[in-house]
Image (cartoon, rainbow, N blue to C red; front, side, top):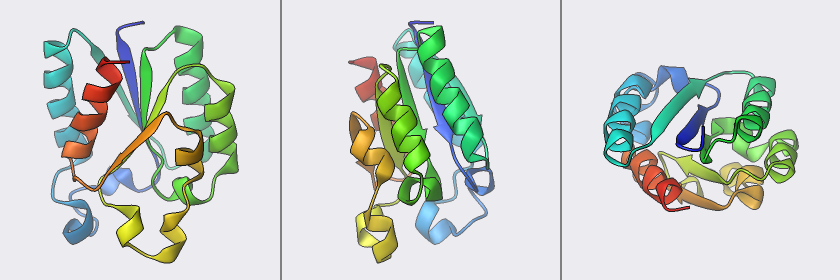
Length: 144
């Protein structure tokens, strides 16, 4: 699976396109997945896009990325970004590079969003460019 990039999405990301479009945009997660799959094909890569509202699923998928030899993980942990030491520890426990991604710029939002436990463990962070953030993360992952 060295040509596969896991794209993991946390809580409420299944509501993209409906949830606060003034912050997150009007693209759905399926729209983003389609754009990523198109670009991944051009890069000779594959996307494994997943979403869960459950923290443990994200942790299991990080472990799976390592176990299957995925090239990288793009992770939008959503609200878990600011609260999950368990995700932080899972990222630190694997060798697979993890790129944190956000549609909005958390630093321009509420104070509680300014701390990222995911970002403290991730290889890098891309945020604030809407759906383009995912494509920028894919470009970065392709070059790792």
